[in-house]
Length: 297
Image (cartoon, rainbow, N blue to C red):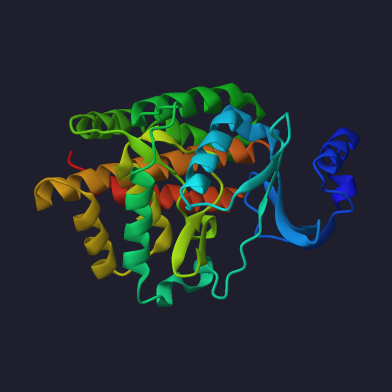
């Protein structure tokens, strides 16, 4: 399987790092950008990740590796054992989970406690050199979508047009968030498949979008993807948002709206390379418009 995916140079670089005669155990949950394999080599099990060059337009790989290693040094991520010179291959330690987080978090009685501890631990990490404000990210997505517009079919162009038409609403949300914006270490993709539960503690993987950014975006992404109960959601909001209850509600509405706009924009970029489904994109747009309705006029 790997022979069809790896170049000779990549195979040689793995071998030079001691990863010879790699045996594929299984293909892991594959995102729409990268491919992940559970493999066996050197008498241990690892995760081999093959990166999609398309995402270079959205995330600098050197920053991803630096942020991953920061988290690993703090015990918040599995250590990286190998990174290829071109940043297209990563090998990290495989973490066995008795109860995988992405299928069990909704029945975990300690879900709020575990997520709270993770967010607080990430916030204590040193600020990454790479900094991205909400305004920066929106401007970047607009440029990338316009650059790839000619490669989109008619249905995808309609979706791209819908996303770009959100600009005035995005500018309003960005302006409100900027009034009280702070920067901390942020993972920015804390969905359940990027979290691993080991020994009663959550670990992160996939640091493509990690940077110094607004921590409210991390909270919004986490809550949007986890679909916790309303009580659990309010608990985490109270723990990680500041200001009056009214201000917390507005901040969360703005951050969540921005999250869904960014998710839809990312989906358009992936679809331009045939990596995602238009139906999934339209679902993201549905969430976008649902949360947009909660914003002040």
